[in-house]
Image: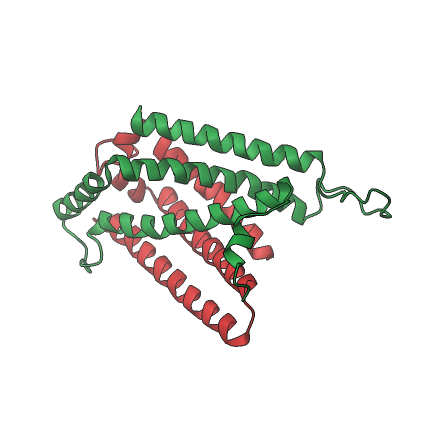
Length: 150
Length: 111
């Protein structure tokens, strides 16, 4: 294993925009994965959590969920949700770009490499969608800020 | 990797329904309450179509997230033992999450 693997992975020196999108796609994916883990545990409390293994009484379930919501309602977790909103929107939008690239749309046609050997797959459209993803993600963060702190 | 892309599209659709139910119909605070509104927590689980959407979202995200983590970990280091460990441990965690989430959906419908 390369000893500098984390730095090499997270910090693309001399990287172009597509290389940054690659890093962001992975960072956002890992971030949202951890949120998914927490979200499944959190919503398990709708039916009383891990300690409950039969159909809970209505009031028991309601109490369990209300306690969970009260516990999570603080600025730290709310700000976490804003970050997750940003990461999820970027991952979705950039992921759609990757979906179309995977099936050959928007990356140009294969041709003889000529000077200055610019890769046709890394074109204006790709850069535009990456920037658009960042803008949409920022918009989602503002939306989340407005709902949770507004 | 085809399954990774297809589950991504699945998340796009079922996740859109999930987020719309939380954010775009009625107020957010009412929608995350237990039973205060039309789209509150228990009402969504009791609707068969919404519960099915949540179940599909659960399966798609569990696959997509843990396959993504698997790809990152296997790219990091190569070896038969490492690859098998990563595959089995991540599959076990994903399976636990699907089972636990499915339990939530089923029990919430029976309350």
